[in-house]
Length: 349
Image (cartoon, rainbow, N blue to C red; front, side):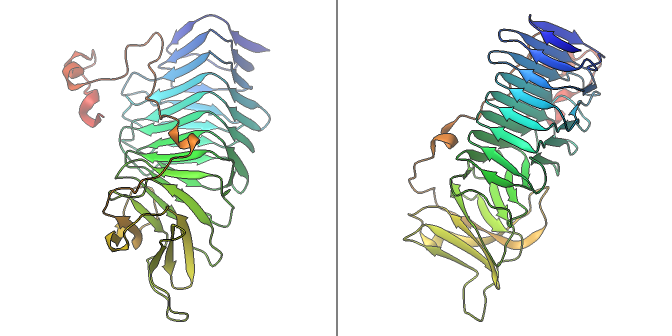
């Protein structure tokens, strides 16, 4: 048995998704508003020019959206939005499945007041579209992509806003992972290879990348380093005596920044044009990261001229409004108009 959505549909309140495979047809949208638990039991297919929107407009309803079967597929060629930014409690987005394929736009958003779970962990994992993981404020919750120890293929753009992406897989493809609005890309298992065609983009002055240091380092492509954002490792930066090597070094010819803790290192291809006198060692104390004192380097000058890869130029779009819902952007001017008297904007954007 299966459910096919072929016209624009809005469901409010509690509904059951125990309906087998779900397909949202091209030209149609399905809005599920204030349904606390949305548990998909079959495959999910959102066609091109179609939309699936699961949102909470109540501060008391945290969203749980799950598809935990290891047999089913998740395919998005349209737009998927999970949005619980109005909620004061923890949200859980846990999409497993055997195969995940995104060629469209996918948005997972939470308030961030308490740590939320955002996991898309299929064993076969492929993104060639846009994925946005967003919180109103940073917390210790992390974004998990792919099956632990496996691999993901990213040829699109993955955007982080007030989030931590914790890498637990190898990463293939020529895509981009963008840290914006106080986000961190955390390479927690550097033994797993990251393709030299994959790109990491620090899009603002508050973002960072942290990688596990090893005796067998990789070289990560990092764009946008400057204006005070940070590149670091999971150990304090310390020079080695035998052989003598500094705590960090920048090769002006190759554009490689090497960070060191004694005999373990990690390499970041930040590009050429940096003034070595503007580097300094700092501590990245962002939520959701291992606490490492003086394990990062910052650059106080502007980002030298560089050309972003095409995948990093894909715009990180704002969270779309849900059809059939009032606009999800809110300001203090409507705080007092909530029927239950709650103050949605206290933790606001």
